[in-house]
Length: 301
Image (cartoon, rainbow, N blue to C red; front, side):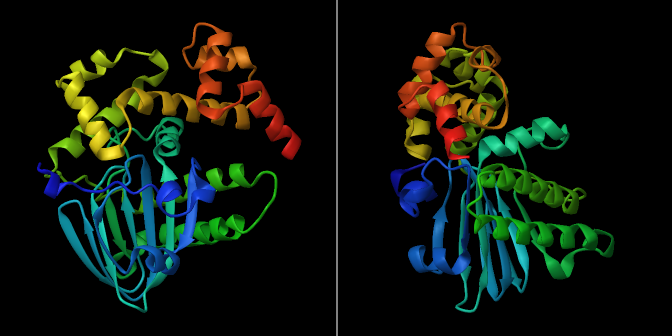
């Protein structure tokens, strides 16, 4: 792939709404994103984020992997992390866009034991309301109702907002899985480097608590460390080791926020051999130690 062919990585927190930098979930109206990026958004990707576009009305042209969908009226497009896509909507198109960190997606796959058919993550999909079979209509109605609950919760400022949003997003993804259960398939990408990056991210999800050296990932991918480093920089502007460490930090924050596990329990659960090293590791990426991170959460709740 030449530099002229390269696909830009857009990070919503960095490139659009810095208020949600490092956030696991972001929600906004389609019109707001269109005002910023334009209604004709050329091909791009989100390296570590899955995205769901829900279109309520208007004409939509959605380029997802190797397919182009032309949809009139209500539809839903699910774009897995690091998947090339482009969108063109008319001036009347309305809807919502949910951006979800890939760690939440993988936690759902693990917790719900839905690995069959989803070993590489939740696949890309287009769901057009007018084409949904009668037997799937109840799941679609439940999906729309859950989306409304997410929109309502997004406008709240309650202490447990983050937990509520994560719970609702997980339910939203389950509804999508049920709707697409008989036809969800992943298209083959023409972009070899993006395929390698996605495989690397999948390996991270399966092995990040093992603290395996980078060369083991490279052996599994059958590429050199220098090539993996180059691919990660090109796709996500982040070196591979930092991607692994970021996944450890994301899980640390989840356990500190949503469980009562002690610091030592979290340390060993994540594969660290020494609580003091875990504390230094966490401080390096978040500026405070994990104990203070949890204390600040409790003080704000």
